[in-house]
Length: 224
Image (cartoon, rainbow, N blue to C red; front, top):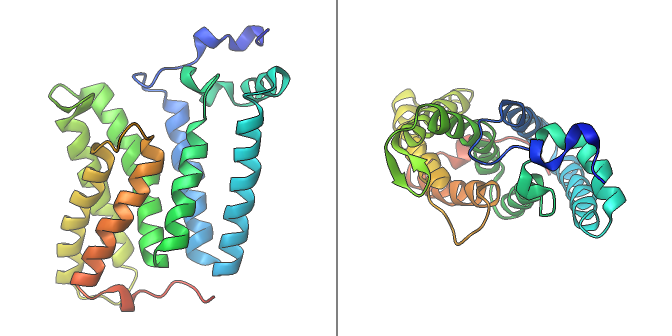
């Protein structure tokens, strides 16, 4: 039996604003960015892999154990969605996506992709649910898309501004990166969760931009 204060009917749906979840998402992912941005590659990799193994293991085994699932609901119920009660949690997809880009892409690409995931995804969702009127793809709206674009462009500019990169190049890359992030948030890939697909799509698009504008070698984050 579920905890009386956390009955499954009280869990939020994807169409709900669910502000607590969005704040938790932004905070948790920004902490991931801070670790990856400041720590060495070895330390970042160790923390990320440890978090992935622990969380994904618990998420898998709670599907098999009612007691473990009850514990997870009691602990994280206010942050969970209805479909996560008996299904994979969004954090599993998120950690999987971040682990993929961490292993495949340059540190600067990883950092910026994580920032897109931290802020553009929840803000676009909030704007789309609260103010979205014009549908463009499934449940996604023009208003949400524009919010994602603005967030990604601003985040990119602030990120690049911390390095010695020509201002005009920062502005151009930021405007284009905004489009990369907004499209990554908008475009569905099969039926995969966007917590998994967004950082990967963002990383591919940003890699192309950084290569085309020759700025990768101007961003050095940490040593191996």
